[in-house]
Image 1 (cartoon, rainbow, N blue to C red):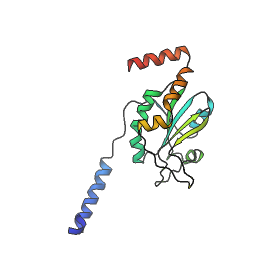
Image 2: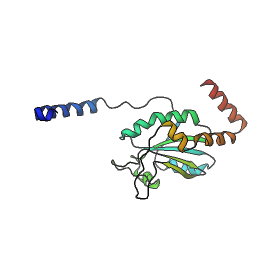
Image 3: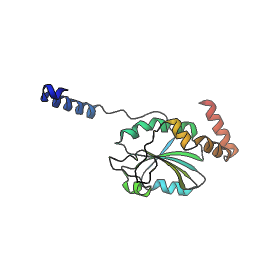
Length: 180
Protein backbone atom coordinates (compact mmCIF):
# COMPACT_ATOMS: atom_id res chain seq x y z
CA UNK A 1 0.00 0.00 0.00
CA UNK A 2 2.79 2.45 0.90
CA UNK A 3 4.64 1.48 -2.26
CA UNK A 4 1.90 2.81 -4.54
CA UNK A 5 1.67 6.21 -2.85
CA UNK A 6 5.38 6.76 -2.28
CA UNK A 7 8.14 4.10 -2.50
CA UNK A 8 10.20 5.86 0.16
CA UNK A 9 7.40 5.21 2.70
CA UNK A 10 7.59 1.50 1.92
CA UNK A 11 11.36 1.48 2.45
CA UNK A 12 11.07 3.38 5.75
CA UNK A 13 8.34 0.99 6.92
CA UNK A 14 10.44 -2.08 6.01
CA UNK A 15 13.51 -0.71 7.83
CA UNK A 16 11.45 0.08 10.94
CA UNK A 17 9.89 -3.40 10.92
CA UNK A 18 13.32 -5.06 10.67
CA UNK A 19 14.73 -2.87 13.46
CA UNK A 20 11.79 -3.77 15.71
CA UNK A 21 12.23 -7.49 15.01
CA UNK A 22 15.94 -7.30 15.82
CA UNK A 23 15.57 -5.20 18.98
CA UNK A 24 12.45 -6.93 20.32
CA UNK A 25 12.48 -10.61 19.30
CA UNK A 26 9.76 -13.05 20.28
CA UNK A 27 10.31 -13.97 23.95
CA UNK A 28 11.60 -17.45 24.73
CA UNK A 29 9.56 -19.82 26.92
CA UNK A 30 10.71 -19.68 30.55
CA UNK A 31 8.04 -21.78 32.27
CA UNK A 32 8.38 -25.08 34.14
CA UNK A 33 9.57 -28.13 32.24
CA UNK A 34 10.93 -31.59 32.96
CA UNK A 35 13.22 -31.83 29.93
CA UNK A 36 16.83 -32.95 29.54
CA UNK A 37 18.87 -30.97 26.99
CA UNK A 38 21.51 -32.88 25.02
CA UNK A 39 24.57 -31.82 23.06
CA UNK A 40 26.39 -33.73 20.33
CA UNK A 41 26.42 -37.53 20.41
CA UNK A 42 25.27 -37.65 24.05
CA UNK A 43 21.64 -38.26 23.10
CA UNK A 44 22.25 -41.47 21.16
CA UNK A 45 24.59 -42.71 23.90
CA UNK A 46 21.96 -42.04 26.57
CA UNK A 47 19.21 -43.76 24.57
CA UNK A 48 21.44 -46.81 24.07
CA UNK A 49 22.67 -46.85 27.70
CA UNK A 50 19.40 -47.99 29.30
CA UNK A 51 16.89 -49.48 26.90
CA UNK A 52 14.20 -49.72 29.61
CA UNK A 53 13.75 -45.96 29.44
CA UNK A 54 11.25 -44.58 26.92
CA UNK A 55 12.38 -41.25 25.46
CA UNK A 56 10.25 -38.56 23.83
CA UNK A 57 12.69 -36.28 22.02
CA UNK A 58 12.13 -32.95 20.33
CA UNK A 59 14.70 -32.03 17.70
CA UNK A 60 14.60 -28.28 17.17
CA UNK A 61 16.45 -25.29 15.76
CA UNK A 62 16.76 -22.10 17.78
CA UNK A 63 16.12 -19.95 14.72
CA UNK A 64 12.84 -21.67 13.79
CA UNK A 65 9.66 -19.81 14.82
CA UNK A 66 7.62 -23.04 14.74
CA UNK A 67 10.09 -24.69 17.12
CA UNK A 68 9.68 -21.78 19.54
CA UNK A 69 5.88 -22.14 19.32
CA UNK A 70 6.05 -25.86 20.18
CA UNK A 71 8.26 -25.33 23.24
CA UNK A 72 5.42 -24.59 25.74
CA UNK A 73 3.43 -27.60 24.51
CA UNK A 74 6.42 -29.93 24.89
CA UNK A 75 7.19 -28.49 28.34
CA UNK A 76 3.61 -29.04 29.48
CA UNK A 77 3.68 -32.65 28.26
CA UNK A 78 6.98 -33.22 30.07
CA UNK A 79 5.49 -31.94 33.33
CA UNK A 80 2.43 -34.18 33.03
CA UNK A 81 3.96 -37.41 31.71
CA UNK A 82 7.60 -37.61 32.84
CA UNK A 83 8.56 -40.58 34.99
CA UNK A 84 11.85 -42.18 35.94
CA UNK A 85 11.47 -44.52 32.95
CA UNK A 86 9.60 -42.10 30.64
CA UNK A 87 11.77 -39.09 29.91
CA UNK A 88 11.59 -36.04 27.72
CA UNK A 89 14.60 -34.56 25.93
CA UNK A 90 15.48 -31.81 23.49
CA UNK A 91 18.37 -31.31 21.10
CA UNK A 92 19.22 -28.21 19.10
CA UNK A 93 20.23 -29.93 15.88
CA UNK A 94 21.05 -26.66 14.15
CA UNK A 95 24.20 -26.69 16.29
CA UNK A 96 24.94 -30.36 15.62
CA UNK A 97 24.36 -31.09 11.91
CA UNK A 98 26.06 -34.51 12.15
CA UNK A 99 23.51 -35.56 14.74
CA UNK A 100 20.74 -34.31 12.45
CA UNK A 101 22.12 -36.60 9.74
CA UNK A 102 22.21 -39.58 12.13
CA UNK A 103 18.55 -39.06 12.99
CA UNK A 104 17.67 -38.30 9.33
CA UNK A 105 16.41 -34.77 9.90
CA UNK A 106 16.78 -32.05 7.28
CA UNK A 107 17.89 -28.81 8.96
CA UNK A 108 17.83 -26.58 5.89
CA UNK A 109 16.00 -23.29 6.58
CA UNK A 110 13.22 -24.26 4.15
CA UNK A 111 12.82 -27.72 5.71
CA UNK A 112 9.37 -28.73 6.91
CA UNK A 113 10.89 -31.28 9.32
CA UNK A 114 11.48 -28.83 12.14
CA UNK A 115 10.55 -29.41 14.83
CA UNK A 116 10.63 -33.19 14.85
CA UNK A 117 9.32 -35.18 17.81
CA UNK A 118 10.44 -38.81 18.06
CA UNK A 119 9.55 -41.64 20.41
CA UNK A 120 12.31 -44.10 21.33
CA UNK A 121 11.48 -47.45 22.94
CA UNK A 122 14.02 -50.20 23.62
CA UNK A 123 16.71 -47.95 22.17
CA UNK A 124 14.99 -47.60 18.77
CA UNK A 125 12.87 -44.92 17.18
CA UNK A 126 9.30 -46.20 16.86
CA UNK A 127 7.34 -43.04 15.97
CA UNK A 128 8.09 -39.64 14.53
CA UNK A 129 6.19 -36.51 13.64
CA UNK A 130 6.21 -35.05 11.06
CA UNK A 131 6.43 -38.16 8.93
CA UNK A 132 8.06 -38.37 5.50
CA UNK A 133 5.92 -39.42 2.53
CA UNK A 134 6.90 -41.53 -0.50
CA UNK A 135 8.15 -38.41 -2.32
CA UNK A 136 10.60 -37.74 0.55
CA UNK A 137 8.65 -34.69 1.70
CA UNK A 138 7.57 -33.93 5.25
CA UNK A 139 3.85 -34.36 5.84
CA UNK A 140 2.55 -31.24 7.63
CA UNK A 141 1.77 -31.78 11.30
CA UNK A 142 0.00 -29.57 13.85
CA UNK A 143 1.94 -29.73 17.13
CA UNK A 144 -0.93 -29.39 19.59
CA UNK A 145 -0.96 -31.13 22.95
CA UNK A 146 -3.92 -33.32 22.04
CA UNK A 147 -2.37 -34.37 18.72
CA UNK A 148 0.92 -35.38 20.33
CA UNK A 149 -0.84 -37.34 23.10
CA UNK A 150 -2.98 -39.17 20.53
CA UNK A 151 -0.34 -39.80 17.85
CA UNK A 152 2.33 -41.00 20.28
CA UNK A 153 -0.23 -42.83 22.47
CA UNK A 154 1.26 -41.14 25.53
CA UNK A 155 -1.54 -42.23 27.88
CA UNK A 156 -0.86 -45.91 27.19
CA UNK A 157 2.91 -45.48 27.32
CA UNK A 158 2.58 -43.57 30.59
CA UNK A 159 0.44 -46.35 32.11
CA UNK A 160 2.91 -49.04 30.97
CA UNK A 161 5.91 -47.12 32.30
CA UNK A 162 4.12 -46.40 35.57
CA UNK A 163 3.31 -50.12 35.96
CA UNK A 164 7.01 -50.95 35.51
CA UNK A 165 8.16 -48.59 38.28
CA UNK A 166 9.34 -49.88 41.64
CA UNK A 167 7.11 -49.23 44.66
CA UNK A 168 9.45 -46.53 45.94
CA UNK A 169 9.44 -44.69 42.60
CA UNK A 170 5.67 -45.13 42.32
CA UNK A 171 5.15 -43.52 45.75
CA UNK A 172 7.34 -40.60 44.65
CA UNK A 173 5.22 -40.12 41.52
CA UNK A 174 1.99 -40.19 43.55
CA UNK A 175 3.23 -37.58 46.03
CA UNK A 176 4.41 -35.33 43.19
CA UNK A 177 1.02 -35.57 41.49
CA UNK A 178 -0.75 -34.65 44.75
CA UNK A 179 1.43 -31.57 45.31
CA UNK A 180 0.84 -30.34 41.75
